[in-house]
Image (cartoon, rainbow, N blue to C red; front, top):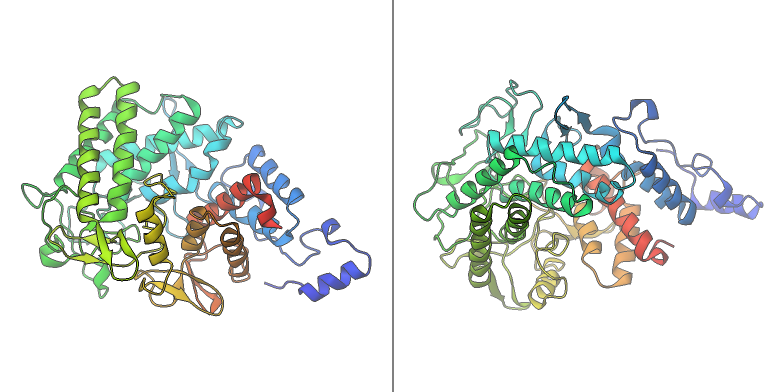
Length: 470
């Protein structure tokens, strides 16, 4: 990408040409957003939001990035599959033509607050909630799906109960939490109970059944997974069940939100996310469906998991004190680290899983943002959290965004935004990861989740603390 230098822009200003009156093209920011005729979904409300941001935020590069990133999910990843009787929306993750339950929920999350102004956005999200319920009922252990129920994809040869229509069958707790989070927020924002039909209730029964099975109190359960691969993080050890756990009430998550396998299968961030989600589902079941029996089961499971996290998921660190472990096995073994993908230990307040001022969380936050976290990287371009999924020295913008979302420090928020602005690799978009010393060395040119998440951060900051964007 060719851009004017700041010296060139300064020269224009010195010649009497105010930068605020120049177009983005004249300032050297090329058009990288997909052209209007090729966009999958258009919303005047979102376009007005972009115009408002660009008009009032003096930092033109942030305005350009907001225009590129915030609507990226709508522009490029949504497909309307609605029938005459039901809204249905399929949302791919970007450069992989499949729908993750996690990613799709997170991708549309920032648009929830605009539903009241745009019925089309409300219908889009309603359609996704309906689509996710159908997917969960196909297989609650799968993490990603195709819109074609007959398609046999690249992972069809995995050694698990694979079936057509599944892109991947990695069991991850958060895959069942994110659809609840989305449905609950949709309901609270609109008071619309349309999504909560018999299919949705059936999906909640499947969620409960799966969570209980993966507490592994009576047996290993029905799920196992192995893949023929040179990557150890892409398969499960010990006959496809992973390392043993002591059944203490926590839920096994065989894989992390990164789609990497867990080492100790009780993944603490995901268990805390499950506590929130179970209670949200219980509230819907009780107030909307009058299904007190299932609601009570959800509430009891949430309490059991929460109690187990407090007993087994908090450990003594020699420098940081009592903090959350990343993974435990219930026998006393634990893994100390954090991963950039959400849910993470860092992102717990963003998911309403814990109060940002909680002392254990604050100590944990200090730990994961320090060199004591083996996946915290600091280079000449940036500092942030990565993970095993991409490898050493690769920072995920998502972790920098979550650092800003969970901060009470204005300077920290400002620095996060400025870091993100400086590390898009001259593309105008966020990426999965970039090298700590070279933002032009990045992975995934089209990763809608991080793009939209960055837009969410910019809009939130603009509405609440606009001075931090100056």
